[in-house]
Image (tube, rainbow, N blue to C red; front, side, top):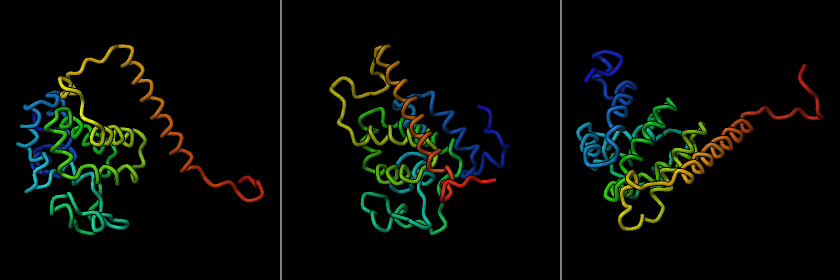
Length: 203
C-alpha cells in the first residue's frame, strides 16, 4: 500500500490530516464487519477505554463554552479532563469523514453498543450544536439517530446488509437533499447581515 500523501513525515505523524484521510480511505471499503473493526483497533482509532480514539478526540472541543466539566459521566477519564486549548478538527471534510467512520462501526449490533458505551452521544450532541457546516451536521444527525434509535428486528442487525427497495432508496436520497438544502438556507440566514435601521441601504 502506498504511503499517505505528504511523505514520511506526514505518515509518521498521527495528528496529520494525511493520516486521517488515509485511514478513512483504507477502512471505508471494508464495510463495518469484523475486518473493519479489527483494522480500526490496529490503528488505535476504535473506542479503547485505555486510550481514547482519535475519532472522538478530533470531534471534541474545549476552551470557551467547554461542557465536559458538567457532563463527564459515561466518558473515558482521558476525555473528561482535556487541556483548555484542545480544539476540534478544523477541517470540515475530515470531521465528516470521522463521523462516517464511526457510522461504519455502528452497522453491527456489537459495534453500536460499543460506541454507545464510550459516550459518543454526548460528544456528537455538542458537536451538532456547534457545527457550522450543513453537510457535517446532517452526517452527525444520522449517526445520532442510529445511536438513540431502537435496535433493528432480528435478522436485520447488520445495517449494511439490509436490502432497501429502489423506490425507498430514491425517496431517502431526495429527503437527504432537501434536509441538506434546508441546513444550507438556515446557515445562510445566520450569516446574513442585519438590516439597517430605518430601511437604509448601504451605499
